[in-house]
Image 1 (cartoon, helix red, strand yellow):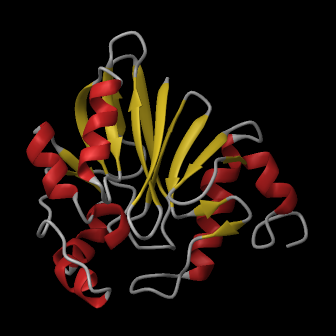
Image 2 (cartoon, rainbow, N blue to C red; image 1 turned 90 degrees about the horizontal axis):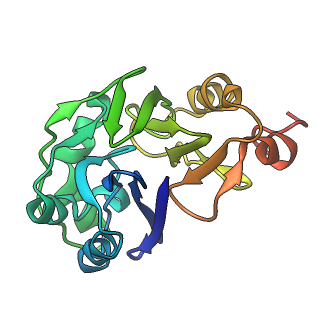
Length: 209
């Protein structure tokens, strides 16, 4: 699996370009900002992008979604429970003194258990709400792209509209932890980690809870 991480924008959000090494089909996960860098990474990787995948609908993960979609012309997939966040995207951006590329259009809504295929890779979708109602994680081959559900040593904030602390803890413990200790976690911000590491040291969901 080809995995390229780009830290983009003023919120230092992780956008991922992920591809199949054999077929060079790929996806873009959470194109939040810095469109030229994202497109350059796609070209450098020689990938043919099949989908744009959204872990959730917050500003820092979707601000430049429209601009990226115009360039790669592929379907956008997201959980429907976060649609209200996309509708409010211009207001989200304005609150931080920023602009966006407009209200994004989602081509297909996805939910728990749905499979997303590109090349020989098959992502399984987990609905992992709490940070936002429609947060999802994409899992395949011992890795999981979890958006802002779980970070190295922390968890996503739950004080934004639709956030729910208890639900987020439940999502982590019942959806992500069962993936196994060796599973590598690629988060929406910060470095990668593993399930085993977070079980041991994460003060929100670790062994001391």
